[in-house]
Image 1 (spheres, rainbow, N blue to C red):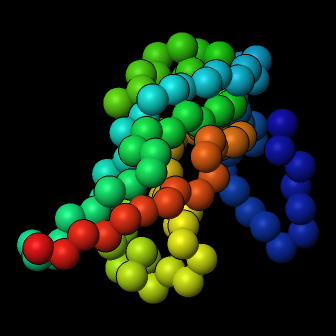
Image 2 (spheres, rainbow, N blue to C red):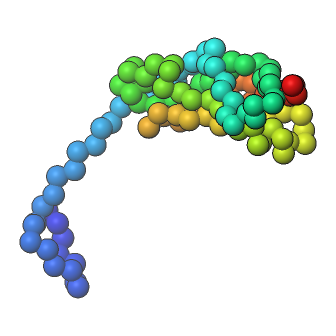
Image 3 (tube, rainbow, N blue to C red):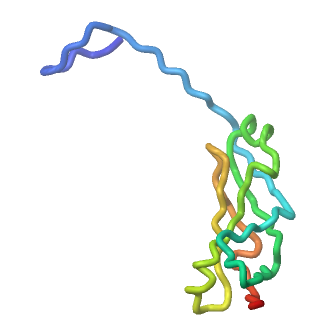
Length: 115
């Protein structure tokens, strides 16, 4: 039952709340491809390595239904041009209700070739 609070009024005296409670588990995904966005036509870009491994955690029912193609790993060409370290950190897009634990490698090296 809902408690009557001073200054509040409502017509319903009770509410039901349903929560999806799941055991939290961890899962690894290997050899995920890295995609580079917005490469100029007069450039070629080599990412080293061009595949990554990640570890994620989430509910057991959620991770049980996830496949590796639901993860998107990208690098924006502009970030490479602005880089001063010789490596960039990729953007990792995760499915809903999944949390990243680690990525290997954390940073990617690159080689830019001009035609």
